Structures are given as structure tokens and as C-alpha cells.
Length: 239
Length: 239
DNA sequence: CATAAAAGTTAGGATATACTAAACTAAGAG
DNA sequence: CTCTTAGTTTAGTATATCCTAACTTTTATG
Ligand SMILES: [Mn+2]
Ligand SMILES: [Mn+2]
Ligand SMILES: [Mn+2]
Ligand SMILES: [Mn+2]
Image (cartoon, rainbow over all chains, first blue to last red; front, side, top):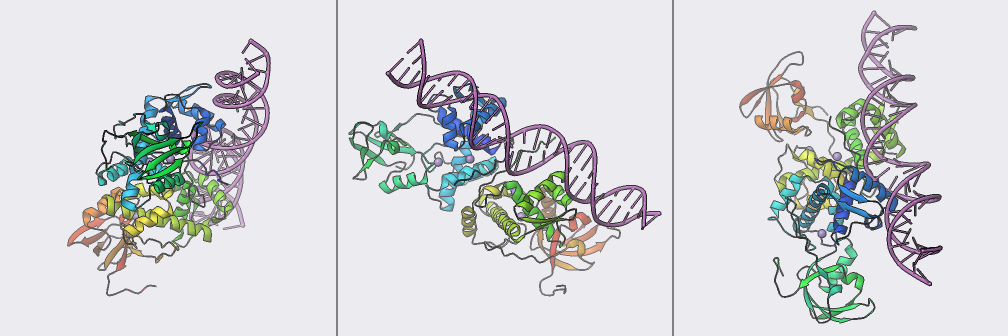
């Protein structure tokens, strides 16, 4: 059904291909868990066959962007990490711009940004950032790396990690699936919202959470894609 | 020395590759002269070897986007023309948006738009157009095709076509070369400006034009890239 | 620890693009 | 109506990606 569209472009200074950039971003994200990015995981995230990922990893390694340990997975080198962070900055600023200035819904920007991020120059992205007053978070609560490549990499708990009775503030959520985002929006879950765990079923069962006074039973899969911070301490941003 | 960057992306519905789109646009533009687009001309415009163009033309023909007559050149089919016009619409709206909303100079937008046009969805482009109040011309005076694919294709005279003593209004100019655009801006030549031909040297010699009361000798090459319309009230008849 | 399942890699092929060199065609100069 | 040549196309390669099938390593299991 979804016919894979051919290839991707290079254009920026370093002349990395759009595809290569997306691989780096995927690896960056998976590495946040501490472990190197596994071939199959990358393949799944990008919707590509594992064999193809093996090939690309070798190419990225040849370019000095990742370090691959055969049968073990890949880690970004400094250069690769820097390239990934630049791409992520572009992605998140573009998302912010589209939502703030062009009326995009937070559930539809990711897809558009996923393409624009490869064609937008640094100049354009910086203009967008400036127009928005240099935002520090994207519409999904994800921190925007600085142009120097600094970013908050704290590992956050997800709703699935909370114990019954705990209250927490929603910080961010996975932004890939627009249906998922609409589901969350329907419950009032968005960055800054407060959620409380009312009940938990055992055996990986659903978590019942209270949001805006209303209870919602939520599957573990969904709950684990919503990242939170223990309530008390106030972070920046609107609450 | 400038190593050609690999390939280009597809993404839109019809799933045309960015490269293919640029070929169609190039062919569209060259066809405006009446003749089919010549291989070498396309090659020069896109900075690609003629042999490569031959290959691409065959592919585009196979896709039903162009009609190629061996050794003669290519013409767009209806489908190809429609795709070209859609791309041109995207390009020109993006240019307009960048200049109006993000402070780009008219001499620097073409390059950025040349990349973004391939990654921007129709949705995005229409949002930009709406934000600008549906502009009908881009920053270089070029007409923006409607979303239905209608566009003013009048052939305009260039300054090089004017006789001594004639006054005309600048309508549009070639936007590919930013240095050229800065040169024009330095003389006060922009869409809407009025120019008068003061002198002409024979043998393809320079044209001396008066703009804002100042005379400038301009080479034929430059003069023929600035398109004009006989001054408002009195139209010198020709189609 | 012996195996089978899971994960990952290699082999072999396909497509999209480009390039250079060589061959070919069309068109103008005698 | 030839010959030269500018313009085109074909042949042979190369790179970037992706895929399926087959094979190899790791890991999980009894
Ligand atoms: Mn992307
Ligand atoms: Mn996001
Ligand atoms: Mn383009
Ligand atoms: Mn333009």
C-alpha cells in the first residue's frame, strides 16, 4: 500500500542525504535509552527492511557518523551526533513555526516537518526561530537543541512508570502518530497538563488516569509514550 | 569540484522525484519560447551533462510526462504541464512567503524555494498563500499559477527588444542569479519600475536606459532578462 | 550446554541519477 | 549534394537506497 518513494536529497553544506539524516535522527533517539541503536529497531522506526539498515549503517560508519559493532548495533560519533542534533533542531523549530504561524494542528505537523527539515537551510530555520522569539520547546514539549547543539537530555518517566496515587505534570509525548495525538488531546493531555494515576491493573494492564477531573483507562502502550515530571517543581513554559 | 549531491526525494501524492520535478519545470520554461526544450538547454539550466538529460527525458516520457522527439527535444504532455505548474505555484508562493513573512531579500529566495518546493505539501503552500491574501505574483513579478493550473503566459518583451526612446514598465525578471538581481536593484529596476531606452549601440551593443532619472549602460544579456510592458495607458500593439 | 528462535548480515538485484567516452544525426557550409 | 560539426543519444560505470532470500550470530530455553 505505501509504496516507498525513491530516495532523498542532499543539499546542505555537509551534503548529507535526507535519508542519511533520518537514520542519524533515529539512532540518536534510540540511543537515549542508553543502549546502542539496534538494526531492527531502526528498521521498524523508519519503515525499512533490516537488511537495508545494515547497509546504510556501514555507509554511515564509512562517513564517520556512526560506530557500528557487528551484530550489536550503532552509536553516533561526535560528528554524527552533531548532525542529528542539527536536524532535530530544524525539525522542532519548523514544527513550532507551522503551529504558531500557519495554524497547523499539533497532530499534523510532524509529517510536514519530516520532509521540510531536509530542505530548509540553517538560515531559514534561524529566521523562523527568531520570528517565534527563539522557542525552547516544540509543540509536543520536546526541547529544541540550541544551534550549538546543546539540549536537555534528561530521561523522563512516563505515565506508565507512575504509581497509583501519584500526580505528575505532562512534559512531552511522542509526536509520530497523529491519531495518538488526537486521542491524547481528546482527554486533555498535552504538555503542561496534570495527570493523576487513579488505578492500575496488574499484568501490564491499563492505567486509569484522572485528567481535568475525568477518569480515563489508558493502555500501557499509550501511557508509556507520555512523559511526565513529578508535579511539585514548576518548569518553565505555560502550565 | 562541486561534487553533485546524490539524488532527490519524492513525497507528494503523485510521488514524483524532486529531480524529475525540476526537469519538468525547466522544460516548461523553455517551451514558453514556442520550441520544444532542447537537451543541451535543459542540461545547461540544470547544470547537468546532456547525456544525463537524454536519460531522464526517456524516463519522463515513459511516465507520460513529456513527449520526446529524438534529436529534436521534449514537450510536456498535459500531465507533465500540470505537474510543472503545480511546482511553479509552490515555488512562487514559497518565495512570496519568505520575502513577506521572513524578511528574505528578493535576491536570495530563489535558492531556498528551489529546495523547499519539493518538500512542501499542497496544504502548506495553500496555508502560505492564504496567509498572504492569495498573491498573484511572486517577488520577481512572475505570475503565480492558480491551484487549478491557470497562469498568464503572455510573452513579454524584454528591455533588449525596446527601441530608442521607448518607455516601458518593468513587469518581471529572471530570478535565478542573485548577483544579477542585486545589480538590478542597484539601478532601481524592480517590478513596477519605469525604464526608458536612451541609446542603443549597434552590433549587439549595450543599451543605455534611464531609470529614476539616471542613465545606465546595460549589456544585452542583462537587458534581455528584464521583461517589460509598454507603459500603462498607451499599449503599442502586438498581440 | 544443545538448539531453536530472534536478530543481523551478506548476496544478488532493482531503480533513480549522474558522468565520461564513443557513436550518431541533423543542419549548415561549400 | 557532400563534409564538418554542433547537438544528441548510447554504452558502460558509479553511487545511494531499497528489497528478498539465504546464511550467520546471539540469545533464549529446557
Ligand atoms: Mn525527515
Ligand atoms: Mn515534535
Ligand atoms: Mn527545485
Ligand atoms: Mn521568482
